[in-house]
Image (cartoon, rainbow, N blue to C red; front, top):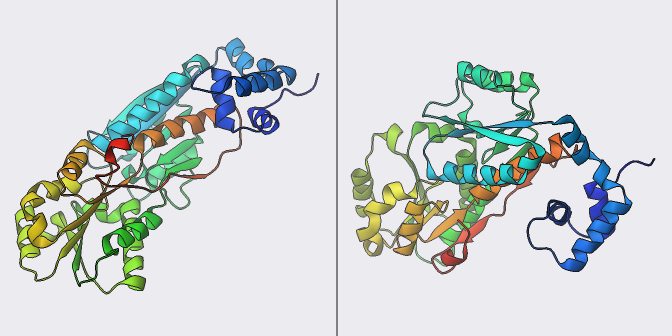
Length: 343
C-alpha cells in the first residue's frame, strides 16, 4: 500500500492553503462547498483517513502542553485565551494545557525543574521570563521538549518557533508615525516603567528601530526615561514635559501606555502631544477613544497564542516541517479604525 497523503500534499493538489485543508478535515470554519468537496475527495483518494488520526486514536495518545506566562497582565490574558481556543480545536487529538502563571521576578531554575517534572510534550513560553543568567534556558534546551516563544525571540534560543512581530521593524514604523507630517521641531520621550524593561529583548529592539528611523530622517531631540531607574513618578515627568517650549511626542514601547496616559488627559492640547504605544488592552483602548493616544501598534496576542498551539500540533501530531520565525503583521490602529479591530 502506498504512503498516505499529507495535509501539505492535499493543499497543493487542491490549490488551497494548509489552513483551509485543516478546517475541512476538522469540520470547522467556513469553507466553500466546492472547495470542501474537492479537499475531501483528494483526502479519500490519498488514503488520508488511515494516517495520523487513526494512529493516535488507536494508541490513545495524549499531548500535555504547558504555557509559561506572566501573571495578571491583560496582554498575557489574551495570549492565554488564544491558546485555550487552539487546545479546544485539538481536544479530539488528546491535547490539554496547563498554565504556569508567574509573578514578578521571572522563572527560577527551581521553578523550571518543577515544570519539567510534569512531563510535558510541548511548551509555550514568554522568553523574557527566563532568568538566572541563562541557566533556565539551558535546562529547557536539555529537556528536549519542543517549545515555542511568543512575543519575544532570543538568538540561539533553541526554540521550535517564534511567533510575534519583528520588533525592530515595528519600532521603525513607530518613528515614522510619530514624525509623519510634523513640520515644527519637537522633543521625543521614550518612556518605560521598570528597570527590567531595559533588558526585555522586544522592548530593546523597538527602541533601536525607533532610533534608527530618527538617525536617518529627523533631528528631534530624544530623551529616554525609565521611572524606576530615574526615580521619577508621573507627576514629575509631566512637569518635565510642561517645562519644555516644544511639542512633546511620547513613545511607550510596551502595553503600559495607560500608566502615563491617564495623567495626560488634560495636557493633550497644551503639550501638542502625539502619543504612540502598543497593544489593544482595555485601558489603552479607552484612552484612544478619549483622544489621548494617537496610535497603537496591535500585536494580536490572541492570534499569537492560538498559532503557538497550532505550531505544536503540527510538530507533534502531523510531523510537519515548522517555520521557525512566524512574524505577525504590524497593525496600526487609530481611533478611526479601532472598532473594526479584533481585540
